[in-house]
Length: 373
Ligand SMILES: Cc1ncc(COP(=O)(O)O)c(C=O)c1O
Image (cartoon, rainbow, N blue to C red; front, side, top):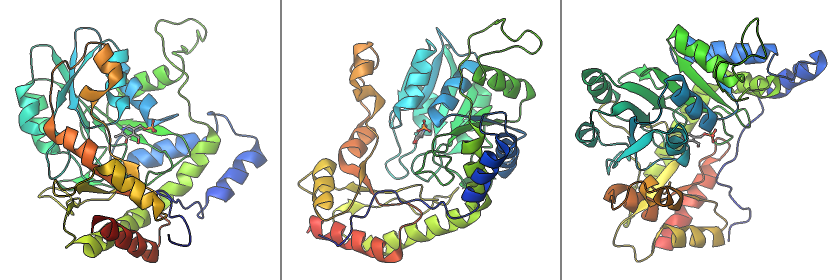
């Protein structure tokens, strides 16, 4: 066992975070009314080439608000990947709409465009695109399909801060895009999220849904139900400091991904994330690995063996059609998505936090090779 446990995420808060937090405390601005919230909204939207940013309390809430903002509801179908976080399908089902799944591409782990096309029906209203683990989905083809069929596009870029697709920033595609600021993200606010859009009306609707649908002038009279999804000035202060060094963070994460790739390149029995595709470079939100069929154990066993060697890991997502909660709701009966199923059983990610050192990466890579021998 190595001397020190290597956690799956180690973050850095050594920029202006402390200074800006002190400013909140000194001025008494700690609620969502404080100036850092607006600053984060403006600067984050600019960073992804959008007109508007609407800060919220987490990425899952941003998905709920985007579904509500686009007025998706009963009778509507929303196409999304089977291989994603529950937040996507729960936002759609809670709105009374139906998630319709597609499988993943085995190389990029992102949703397959041919399957999106095959699943469009007269009830389809939207595509919820999710960029997975550092590589974006094929946005040009997805946007083309959406335009042909007059579908709305929600882009879940929770994991793709600083990523781009055909040289356009992730978060700039479709009607509305969302981000998460959880501590394992390239930009964190502890808990937090952001909706971004170019559409004035959608942005205003998101602001209203975030704030209980209070009405200007008639504050406590409500035409619609919203939520309290507000982000505090304290969270936004951390976010502004984090955003200041996003470019540096992306550079380091890419270097970490390259180092893992170099150290693990010839290891039999595992598949590594693609470093790039024709349309994008991997920004390595996390460094995921997938065990080949030649390995006689699954991801859960690999993670146990790594934990015994002092290495933290996380499993990959478990696909939506295999979620007991959705099966009980009568969704996805008998559907199979073999790539997603394989990723869930044989995929996991290794320590990928921004504070990880090259020496730690070498230790993790050596331990991984050791358990596969
Ligand atoms: C693709 C994706 N969407 C949405 C979310 C939800 O974000 P949050 O944890 O901030 O609610 C996550 C979280 O990691 C995610 O990976």
